[in-house]
Image 1 (cartoon, one colour):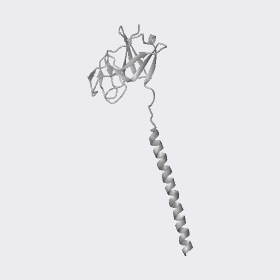
Image 2 (cartoon, helix red, strand yellow; image 1 turned 45 degrees about the vertical axis):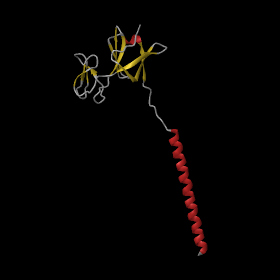
Image 3 (tube, helix red, strand yellow; image 1 turned 90 degrees about the horizontal axis):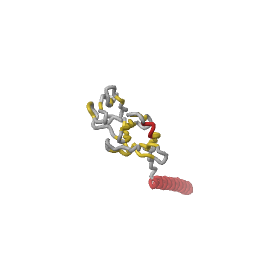
Length: 152
């Protein structure tokens, strides 16, 4: 009987030791993962809109960037097509300005709210020119509506 108790005690000690080793390994793994902080910055917020000549007209919609690019005598500006109410994509209205097809918000030609549930005006994003002469929109950086990229 004494030998059976010793055998059982030894077995339980081995199981406890193995559990302690497994728990320690898991704690070490979790600590290492925490220290490395898997940060995801997401996709780039910069979009290549193409050459300046692409924007010869008054207003061009760039679908992959979600921007209305406007050219006038002062230069280029880029206004977001994202409604400030719930993020739907606004469309150009027949009578001028913009309208949100989801909830009816309306904006004038400069993106100012003229009606509906939208809480604020459409935003404008920063435009720069790269070394090759392409127009680059930085969707993460908003600017004032009168900010322009000079197009020489």
